[in-house]
Length: 157
Image 1 (tube, rainbow, N blue to C red):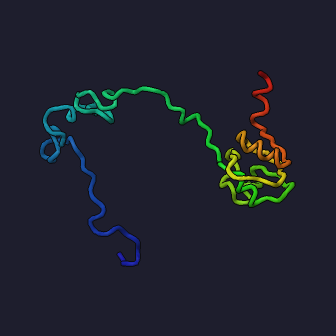
Image 2 (cartoon, one colour):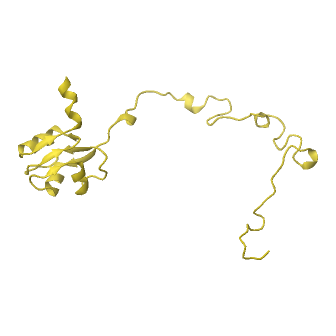
Image 3 (cartoon, rainbow, N blue to C red):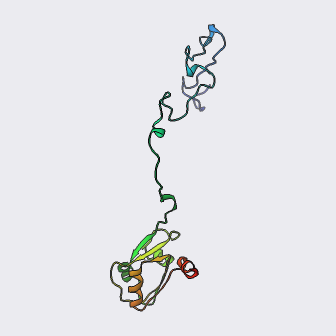
């Protein structure tokens, strides 16, 4: 065979080990499983975390309490000082405009405005959440605040 054909290197392909075909095969009798014990039986497997019959660690430790982690809502935070620096008076502030100005990283995640800093320009803010301090400062500067998610819940009560 010429050398320019693709082939596996010498010793890479080994013959399949056939077990349980008589003692003369070298793997007869117990077929390489040893003599006795759990591993020599058919179906003799253990599960992950098995500790030889000892009470496993995951059963020894108490599982207590409740975690809100799978239900919590992660907000992208924007402060008033950031809005003051990036927007002009009369601009509309929403998730997409904040993304375009580089103040949030992902436009699909919810945004919350916090009240750090001062604001002197009137902005039309429409985001998922606004802190009470930030809302007061924006409205004192002549702006308007809308939170589309929170509009329906408190009006029904």
